Length: 139
Image (tube, rainbow, N blue to C red; front, side):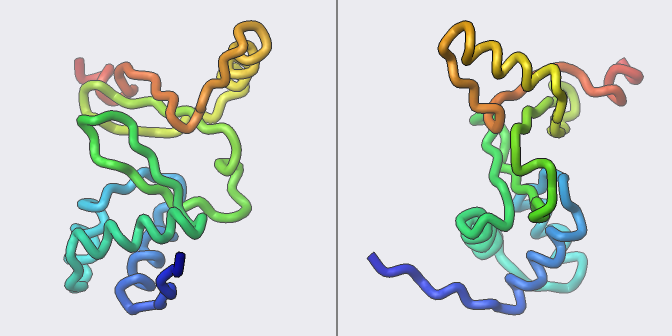
């Protein structure tokens, strides 16, 4: 099997530069397209998605597919980031915001499930649903 060479196009560079400005944030392909279009960059959703998938393959970004009703999210993760390890997610059922939960107590739950129940939890696909602080204040 041959792999396509990874060309460093101007669009790819602009895309990666943008992702570097939002480390730790979950970004959808639509978010990327909106941002680049506001910057005057002409780029299609298919091109953005293809480039994001390549960056996932290269380890430059992480991809999260939370559920069938939400678009895939991508996150730029610098090499020195603590997010290379265990990462749980929380999703607000009101506004849809998705954010990371790096918490030692949750890591203990993951370890407990393995040690006492023989269940290996995938923290990158574990999502807690509820209401974020902002939505709770407006409810």
